[in-house]
Length: 270
Image (tube, rainbow, N blue to C red):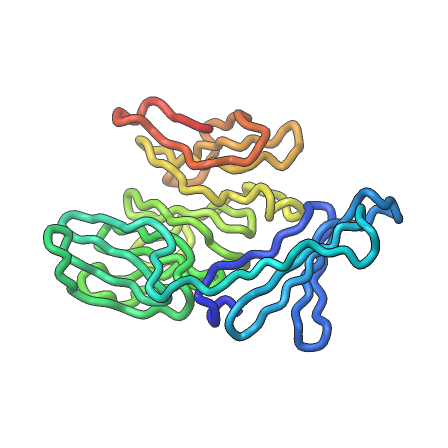
């Protein structure tokens, strides 16, 4: 489905209830909980995946039987749409569209190479250490040679990687919807360390989905807290071994992109 539409799409329900059924040939996604017959709580969403579009509608149980919201149509994006940031490394720029990675000269846009990966590119790219890192497909991180676009390695996780990784000191760092934050060796793609940032039962809502930032020997991650008092949603890891250097609970709502000042000694977290 994702490949057909070249469009990242995630169905997500309430943390306490989620079910997926398939009726006939139409996928039906039911999200939310039905609260013991309470008429003012609960709803479900019907999603139809058609050859040229996705149609969704919601049934609200607070309204009379048979009442649906107006259908919403999600059309495929225009061909060639760039889903995330453009990576810049020296005099080169790299970007992805569809399932293709493009390399161009920064000063004049001269094309140098293009390469295809096995899956739709779902977010921005990152370049560093002579490599280009591409989150693509449902749950893969590709490493391409920055000189010619040849695939060096591919690392797969259990659930989607929705944000661009960061690169430092021979390692590439990224989070995924399986709740883990990982460090891989840039040269080989082997796992150096990983940290379970979200528990199994709430990984969809508190996974480390935003890009990390780098400062000194630390890589800092922001995520949504899982609701437990002890959970911290701003965590600094040692880049070398993944040990937690410090953690803070700064925002009870959704986490967002964090940033460092130019000196790298002040962190800004929404």
